[in-house]
Length: 121
Image (cartoon, rainbow, N blue to C red; front, side):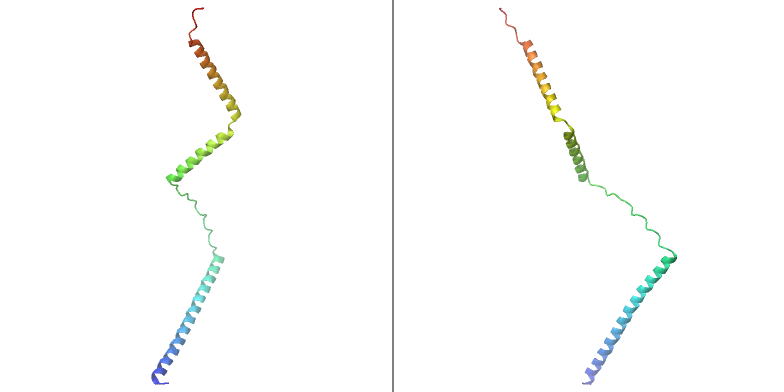
């Protein structure tokens, strides 16, 4: 092994050991820091408990014009379906038949009055 390769090899080993020791030291410090923060929070909460968070406020998002139109349409359809379901169609049919008969009778009576009577008998 020559002078140059020995120097570079020694430098590489020393730098690697230095890097690893600094990295391990940094990781240990981070763990200690997190542990100390957690312990401080626990001790603080024993003395002064955290206040209860207020309940989330309810916020209604405004609906678009299209959604409002859909809601109106659906309400109208629902109202119509309920009306159709609540109607007694047998009574409506009987009432309609009576109206048609009365209209026909009235028209027949009116036509009968307007027809000229034969003269000559």
